[in-house]
Length: 318
Image 1: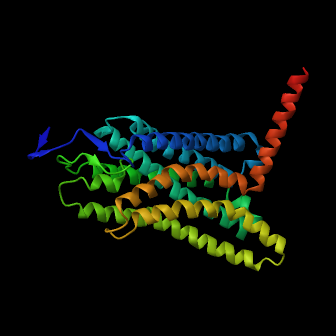
Image 2: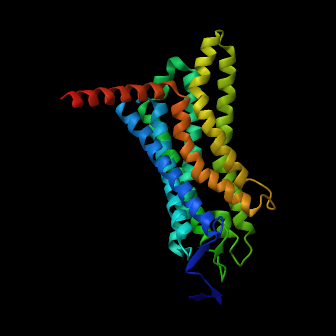
Image 3: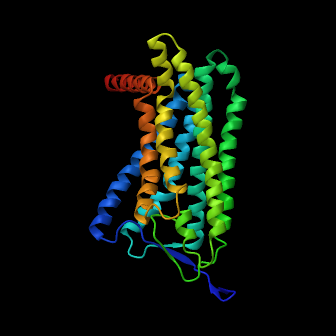
């Protein structure tokens, strides 16, 4: 198919991490196990929140959204990567590549905004606890969640449309693990300065704006915690934010390092490893962080396991 004497590609070839067969088999097993742990861990968190009425609070409503986004983000990248690790011809159709970019970019954007929303929730819980239930009512929580989903999706739709209007000519080799926006833009056989500016501006809006809101929230939270007289009170207030803070450092840190940087750095390999960390490791770690560092979640797990143990004993006796 030719337009204006330029050839438009019908498929792309993802070069991935390695061309060595043994390395690819090892990576396939490793990433498959990590993906299964990610799916299981996040769905267990969602199920636990649904089953335990004590977790029917704004914080865990947003955590449910975060877990669903994490699973969806991992699913938009890892299954395709697993197939290519064992395939000889590592091709992805043009439409599939566009769809992967749209969904992965969308889920990532939704997560950044959700983390800012969760920071606001923690700010209200620590700084204005007596009015927490009044401020964080069901209607507001629903609107904040919808805002997260809509803003991330719209940002992704705009980027995907702009990126795949670029003529790729005969360039079809994507030196990345997936159809990542920077890697796809590099294939264009025209000047992409405007696209790079749009990506930078979007990164500032969708990454730095929520990040600044998170930062402001935690400045207020820390200031409030330091004013608490009792050591036990400060410890309790800190523990209400510890899990969210750990997830924020993981998610925002990797994304900012990837997208807001000088054009000359990091290297292609570094970009792959950073994207891999964000796509594979972060969604797997999030449910673990909320399970290990959260007393309410640990208490819910113990209650559920106790109920299951009691039910098993009754069935065995019967």
